[in-house]
Image (cartoon, rainbow, N blue to C red):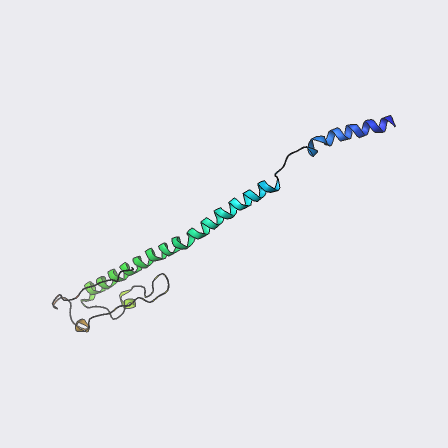
Length: 127
């Protein structure tokens, strides 16, 4: 019997450090989860405006490239193109909306080199 008691005490002493090892409490885990939730919500709320800004920047670049394509076409062929696709420009912006190209009917088939300079190329404000 003495031998069994001694073995029981030795085995208890071997596992004793595991019983007193500290871990995280439920309150600590809850605080960490709340903090992660707040960080995630903050990040998710910033994604929308950042995407909108990127699409706006891309649309501006598309309009500028369309304008340059029309100018390049006019310089090469001495007349304005019928459509943006003829000039080699994209027809839609970053949101998939159509770009509108209007041409003065007085300049339809005329040579731009001999026509009075009464035409302008303008873009609309995005405000």
